[in-house]
Length: 128
Image (cartoon, rainbow, N blue to C red; front, side, top):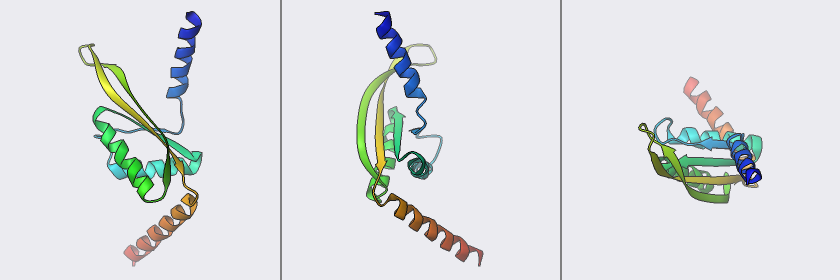
């Protein structure tokens, strides 16, 4: 039994150390902050995991759909679960959790280069 407990503890530690995970909040940052951050993570890691709890789930789904609809990402995996969180009074509360794993599309690099060129052109036009 101790071996199982130890294995579960190690798994939780490994899961929190993922470098390509973005934990999304629906109050801290605007939607397109997460869209652009996910693009940068995909440039580095080829895959990104978007994670959220409770009310932030809608934000994660929106980010994933924007990336998919614009041709930057393909859906690899969707995982839903319920986690127990303690509130201010240390009472356990059940919260919904979602994890969406997205991978780069074949033309991801071309789309990123095109959007960088468009951004540069807009910057040059704004300066003149």
